[in-house]
Figure 1 (tube, rainbow over the protein chains, first blue to last red):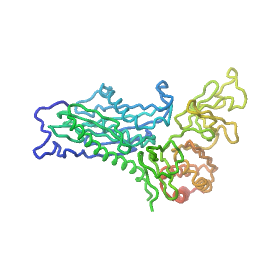
Figure 2 (figure 1 turned 120 degrees about the vertical axis):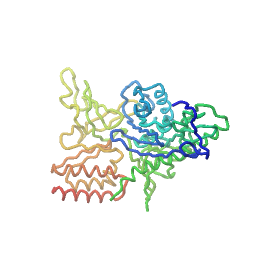
Figure 3 (figure 1 turned 60 degrees about the vertical axis):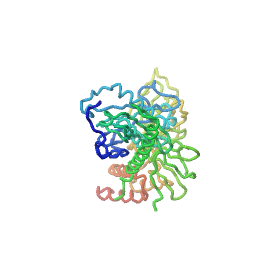
Figure 4 (figure 1 turned 90 degrees about the horizontal axis):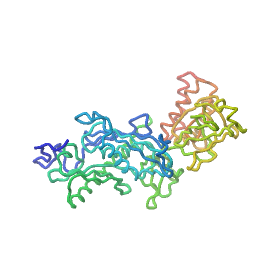
Length: 243
Length: 229
């Protein structure tokens, strides 16, 4: 990670370093119910970024002091596998992972109907298997699918995607190289069905116009992502067909 | 022809949709919106059926519980729900209980199944159970099968049609509790695995139509293959 001198992020023909158009996302793959032991699970891939999420609950909290009298507590653990990066990552939770766990929890808390199950806890475990940029948005997407798979009531499905600025051009769904060498990175998560933005961060500098344009690009991308989420959920039940 | 479709969280439902469990649908701007993955059945009046639910106890429910720990004056019972139920010694024994002279584990131990009724549950306190009624108490024989609570109505069927078919085909006694546990007692022990397979098939295909006939055929086939009469 970090800036590498002499990296060309936008090619002569206006396409990005991997041949994508500025507003094109990486190939996305989604699958639900990938784990047997959890109540709900999902695997989400954005190009080479690969994230698995598992949901347990609602259940009686293991630590009783965390329970809330009027709603369920959401506990989120975002973790990167030691083999997910080019240099081995220490498996101990880093400052970044603790922070991302909180950010993801807050992005999901506003859409999960936690008041339906007071005094319980809903545990979400997110494991990044392979990191190539955009892991937090992929994590939110996977967690949202896993929650739906677990049958936990939620207002709507959430999807996430990041918009970046590289060499003066706004690009959708930044990867590791663009993130490390670009001028800005703006992850966004939203629930298009109810028109709510649940995560909005910005790292770097964007002008006011660029920010508005970037947000529009992100929301357009999220709409597509949520459509894919819906297909993935429906596919799980359509798979069970009668011979 | 396909009047049954899968809906996902965030999808709008027709305003006249019948909602059996308010936990899984919410209102937004005056519209009914699904909160979980479910089946919208529009063959007659639209009905929304969640495909995955969490059992939330309601007073009056007859459930099958698993004793999870023994305390001094009561048992804690796992009822396949986020909330652990309480069964008091006095209620189970039907007489006052003195912990100085008696030991609760003599009557019910960890791992025992009981059939009980939910007396009260108000979200501020854990559910309270009773066995002081006909047919309730410790389960001594048979087998317990656990399935998704959302699929219990399918095992029972319309006006109990599926349950009747299962009983007549296998000759077993079946009790399906709302918390997702099914108690089966078979006179013929070889019939037990057939019934378990049939119930698992219902759980897996609960969202498909024409299930009763298919399960019936499946049981008949299994009986021939396994040579069970």
